[in-house]
Length: 243
Image (cartoon, rainbow, N blue to C red; front, side, top):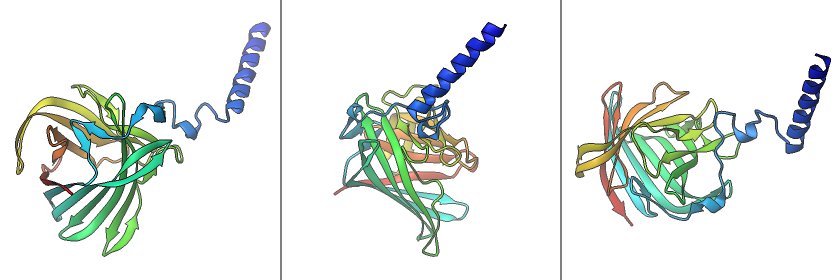
């Protein structure tokens, strides 16, 4: 028994020395936590984002409109020509704004990049909420590699029914998830009728208010319809323009 205890003590010392030399503990926030630790290598990423369900072309503007209990929401999403280096990856910057009854209520800069396999990764967001023209909150903002935050996948290369994945990871602050429900949906919107669309269930581990179904269709390459599961409220893509 004494020999067993001695061996266990030696193993414990070796483990402590190992983690000290690596500059991190087994649960170090530098790599998130044990349940999620994606490997990000800049050599695995390409300069364009051309996933058929999630395509980002600089100069594109997507305009959405929906009705909520508080009024009419309008949302514009602009794919900019700007890039931001995050974890060594040149990400594409997307500028997103939301108005409620013509008053700006939210403004966000999002950063995305696509790997060689075709997965589109979400690397972070700079988000601001507004009230009467003033910033009231930046909650939910995060950047991969900062304060334990890590990139997630916004769109898989080959989504299949049953897939479930993290879209973002900033423990306790930003933990949106997506589940693939169908890849054969037929959807009708102001832009027309589309077949073989992708349907996801978007939810959050930290925000119970997020409970949506999203529909992505080819050849649009973007969300064309969002439906709040609880209220039934819809947000539809009205137009796509290119500068």
